[in-house]
Image (cartoon, rainbow, N blue to C red):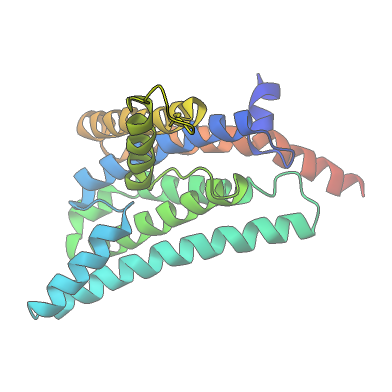
Amino acid sequence: MFEPIRGFTSLQRTPQTDLKLGSVLAFVAGAANAGGFLAVGQYTSHMTGIVSSVADHLVLGQLVLAVAGTGALLAFLLGAMCTAWLVNWGMRHTLRSAYGLPLMLEAALLLVFGLFGAAISLLTAVFLPLTVVLLCFIMGLQNAVITKISGARIRTTHVTGLVTDLGIELGKLFYRNGASDRSPVRADRERLRVHAQLVGAFFVGGLAGALGFKYLGYISTVPLAAVLLLLVLRPALDDWQRLRGA
């Protein structure tokens, strides 16, 4: 069971492995984003909307909301920075779980969100802003993981870019080349499949997250954390055994 999953976060990568990991992470991101919206009334994966909202709130004189949006942006940024630090630290120490370290942290934070989510409804004024910051940090953390692993070829929370690339390839696919065209337009069908799969995984994850939060509440994030831990468990155990034997 662990052998196929083990390769998802290994240091030796293939495009197929990157796509498998990217699909799983896109599903988790979609679920966390959709469930998080039902919890805090705000999507936390796309910074485009948050940056725009900060500008709007500043113009409207809503400084508190502008500061809150800036905090969410900084949390996403810190999440991405944290991933870079953890991965580079893991590689410097030749850990097989170097790519899995940010996923372990993400799993822990999702557990915090799921297990202590009830406090949000009890003390909304205190915990709601912290929850938004937490979810933005998680999204930045995760998006940076697959970005770094795949050399920026795959992203899991930035669906706008995925849909844009999907549209470009579809445009090429349905373009009618003339018989005399010396350089016919050809769609990259593999790229088309990759982006379609990632968008689909994010959408299915969103459905699962929304349904899970609607019927189970905050505890629905616990299975997401379990999936992430499963991805990194075997490499982490290998590192633990190697360090103990050193």
